[in-house]
Image 1: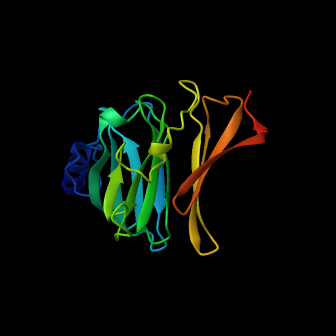
Image 2: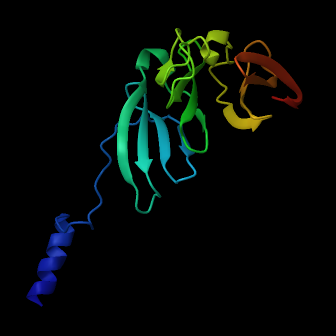
Length: 199
């Protein structure tokens, strides 16, 4: 009986290893979105906005039931991000490349890119983004209708052996329809989808 009471006491105090839930140590923005991507090997990345406005990435190696966190690092500084921004993320199946989309404080559609290997001098390996990223959607200056619209979605596909990105949003220039920004190769194009009306 004494042993049973001792075990119960330890559990109640949260001392018994493995049974007491530990609070998360991250201060997440209260109105923030979360975007996630997963590779074919079950590795995953989660993007979220912290309370200071910056966007962070958490990496999990392996399946969620037996995986472990391998990174938690800042991707986008707070001064580049709209507080409470919607988030969208897409990636290659092996996670060697990913694209993170969000809104800037001026409601400009923005992007950060990760590439495991360098493609060219303008497409180096690692993470890049911000106003100096010439191949990011940020340089196109697509302005999203704000502050009421939180519509943001993206798709990564391979077409004719060439990657293609598609991003959907509601443009400030055409606030009554959904716009699509598409990129195949190095060129972004922007088209409205007239059958998708926003009322």
